[in-house]
Length: 187
Ligand code: IMP
Ligand code: MG
Image (cartoon, rainbow, N blue to C red):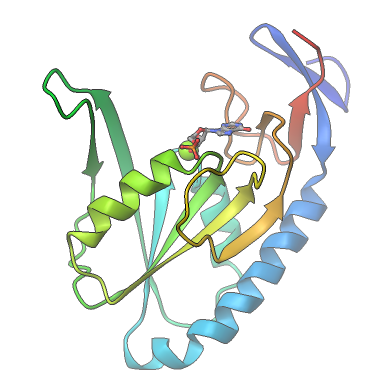
């Protein structure tokens, strides 16, 4: 750590890009949209928020403090590894204990970059026949997104820069910081 605005993680220098207050305001606005869109449905059947570990933990905690309808909150983890067979990349959903058949599901993700990992998640969830699935992400990189599924709820959009903080990591460090930091060196 250097001073209040910069810090070193592993081999890279980072500087504050988005202060915590701005992130929290964006999450508050996103919660207001969700409250408007889901309140009526939630009175019939509470939707399920599904946080994607590890990165989404702080986003989920902050968002939930502003959600005003009844809901269930659970977490999943996506394990991806290279298969040895012809299918190549295999992904598996760890921890989905809830029966989501016929339920409204809202995925909570820290960041959608190319969209590849979200595509895997959407595919595994579809097999469980939910009534609806929407994506709410803290960060969206429009310049990096290469897929065509809708990402309806985006708290903040950024460029293609690499960020850490508020749950996001650089090789597992940096998740605990309340501000968002961006790479500040030109390695
Ligand atoms: P995807 O390209 O959308 O599949 O993103 C895959 C994963 O890369 C995300 O879930 C994050 O864990 C990670 N990631 C993408 N961009 C960033 C970033 O700027 N900072 C930290 N992690 C990132
Ligand atoms: Mg992630």
